[in-house]
Length: 114
Length: 111
Image (cartoon, rainbow over all chains, first blue to last red; front, top):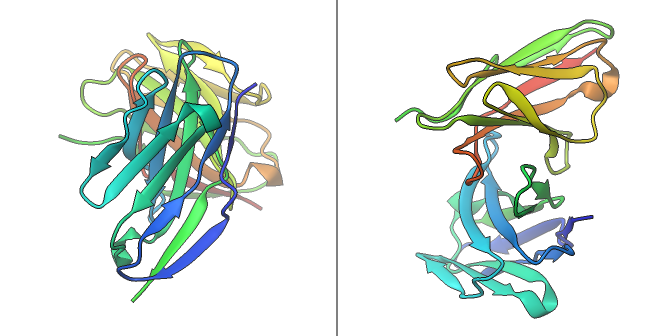
């Protein structure tokens, strides 16, 4: 069975601080995909990134960066110089190759205070 | 380029009633997945439709059924509504096995 754990239920920081959201996953599959989605108060899940299990390169996109470590089954997400607009619930998700469903973690509610 | 659209935005029903939710996929996508998101939880996979057939199903009872039309749009039907069916219902579209893009959701309240 697959499982995604986001141990941080809520995080609150002051604007311009850096913040890291943790994601730990469990799977017995050798090929799988990891995702991060952002859910603002409007409710729509916004796709941020997809990572393949065979590609452990870290990725940076503007203020966002992702650290994928297969050895610890983690896929952490860092926001540098946070902004109020980053406030949202962030979900990490897992999908095994050949399957259709995304398995989501419980989400981390991030609040950036001005 | 229109994204995933869902209707209605909000819906209030009473226990025992039936409800139909609708989803139009993003242009160029042929696959539609449905998820249920209870308050404070992550989305849970209900099922996925491709080529007008249910391709995979999550752990939901038969009261939850769906349909996909030739234009790739989809409906989610829930019969005999229970209070516990109150949730945000999210539709996601993709191109076969690729990344899923989500719509704004339908907020269902069962009284």
